[in-house]
Length: 118
Image (cartoon, rainbow, N blue to C red; front, side, top):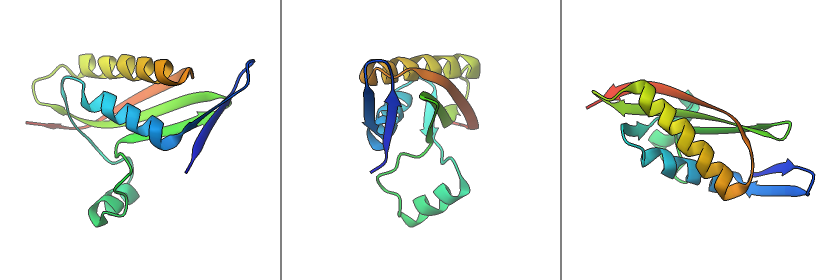
C-alpha cells in the first residue's frame, strides 16, 4: 500500500493513497454536473477493461512534491452545465475535503474535462 508522507514543524503525517483517492473520488462524484470520472491514462483504460484495477478509483491522480499535494481530476460533465462553474466547484470541494480530513495543504488541483455526456 502506498503511503503519502508530509513533514511539517509538528512531525510527520502519513495517509494511505487509497484513502485519499477514495475521499477525492467520492467528493467529485457527488458534485452537481459531474457525470462520471475518466481514466487518467491509456494503461488505466486497459486495466479497467480487463478488471485488473478494481480497487483503483479512475480519474484521480495524486502527486506529492516537497511536502505539497497536487491533484489531477479527469471528469465527464453533463450536457448543459456551466463547465467553469463545475470545475470551480470541484476545486473548492476537493481542497476542502482533503484539508479537513487530513490536515495536509493542497498546493494545486487541475480539472480536465474529457467529455460532455447526456
